[in-house]
Amino acid sequence: MPTFSSRRFPLALAAGLLYSTALAIAVPATALAAAEPSPPVVHYHTVKVDGVDIFYREAGPANAPTVLLLHGFPTSSHMFRNLIPALADRYHVVAPDYPGFGQSAAPDHTKFAYTFGHYADLVDGLLAQLSAKSYAMYVMDYGAPVGYRLALKHPDRVTALIVQNGNAYEEGLKKFWDPIKAYWADGSAAHREALSTLVAPETTKFQYTDGVKDVSRIDPDNWGHDQALLDRPGNKDIQLDLFHDYGSNVPLYPKFQAFFRERKPPTLIVWGQNDFIFPADGAYPYKRDLPDVEFHLIDTGQLDRDLAEPPPRRTRTAPPTKLARYQSIISTRLETYAELPAVRLFAECRDAGYTGRLTQLRAFVPHVRPRSEPEPIVRFETPPAHQAQVDFAELRFPWGKRYALLVVVGYSRLLWLKFHPRQTMATVISGLEEAFAYFGGCRCGVALRPDERRHRRGSTRCG
Picture 1 (cartoon, rainbow, N blue to C red):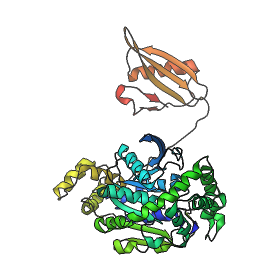
Picture 2: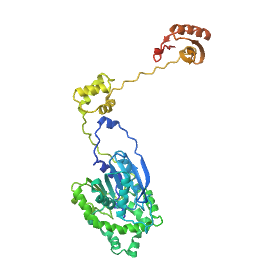
Picture 3: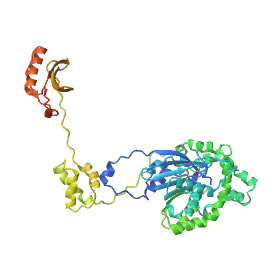
Picture 4: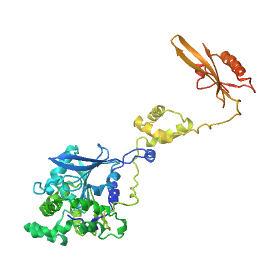
């Protein structure tokens, strides 16, 4: 149903709370500290589901646990644009747009059933195409009846719930709902038209600004984006059909509640306590059916999608690994012999009782192996004609190898060259004598320094 300001709370905070329910992956603490993952990439897809174009956002590893994000009115999966990257480093995140919302198709309301049951079927079809066999659901506003209907269809697939002002109890339907209930009762044109104000621009803006302490923090593009989609031809009738069909959810509330009691999915509730449409009266009853629920009421009037800083993640201590008790042994051995290979360390740890794998040890070693200081680079310069470089160049011809002795005088790049059948020190010395004669004599002493990188092949560099 329409989401007025009071249930609009920080999505970023919701992401932080969601992290608190996740399990840490067991890796060495040093490896965690060194990891610097690249920002997750969000992909935007449109697929046919039962003949209808369904748009969805997707991010995160395909083999990671799936989190399904189900949006509310009047927005779309666009509302999750900041939350998705925050989750995608460890979850496979899927956020669809319902028909009539966002970038999904919007068939004529006289030819398409805009009902919550139909939405649940379409989301189910999308998940089937994505081979998502299990998923945690983040449900907000309209997303609650869509998600809970999906849970009734496949109760074994729901691994967890995150509830953001998503109603499942009649206690949550207060005064605001009286004119809508009148429309449920008789479906009259008069009662239908009376709800038209819920798709008006001032109402859309109201849903973002009402109850907000600092309105300057809200980007007006939020309601501008939503209103542009609401103003599409025919969309008003789509929304009015949905207002009417929302009444079909109420008889299912007892079944939703039975699902909570019987399945007891791990549940996190983050609820804007000042919500005019779904007040906190609808949040508390969850505790009856889910006694272990993690429950948070947020004192804010908006979905603060544009926080300057991301919420801090809870610090979790990684559980000890099989390698933990042998890390001091590895460190001590590497302090004595920094180049000791991981295979040798693995053998020594196995002798000491280590039962883990070599791969875990290999991942740990680079973080504790002492790094030797690189040898300083010594640079020197000489006056012109006081330095020369000597090299043998190997040339291959059809009739055999030949070696070119080259002498290059520094700065001038003056070159002397002579071919020889072999590389020998006698050839180098005699060649230098000829080269210096060619250059006009040797103005100072000559020091020979074998080039260590090529010494095995007999090359000599003179300086």
